[in-house]
Length: 170
Image (tube, rainbow, N blue to C red):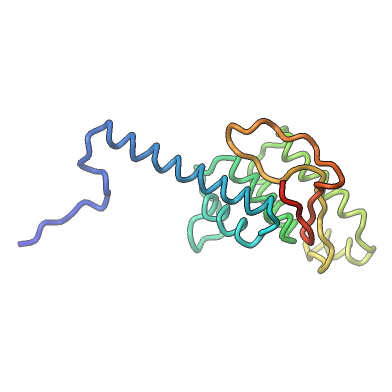
């Protein structure tokens, strides 16, 4: 007769080893966040979105993980914004309810500035149906992405400003 195996890979591990497994998982998430931020800063937005999405959203789902740290959510929102999806960025920001955070304020300010560049009809489509106009990148004036333990980034100079068309490595 076969024995059933536990679904949990660390179910029979001593408590100290379980803690190591947890910290290993947290370390892996931090490493993934760093990779996503690096890709974003290099202008490789497709890979950045993919990596950061995996930290924030369960596979195949359209909702965010309740345990996803806001740091990862802000990075994912930034990657979405730079890849031409300001509505996705705004949805994540609204879900976080972290309006006092400086990065959230920077992202919202970038979108407000971008809205001012839209034609009347683009603006109406955007405000009424969240239709994102083609070839209208959002430009940010800060270094994209946050990494745990990294000191807060100063505002970017014009040479390091980033948009979804052109991104400078930092």
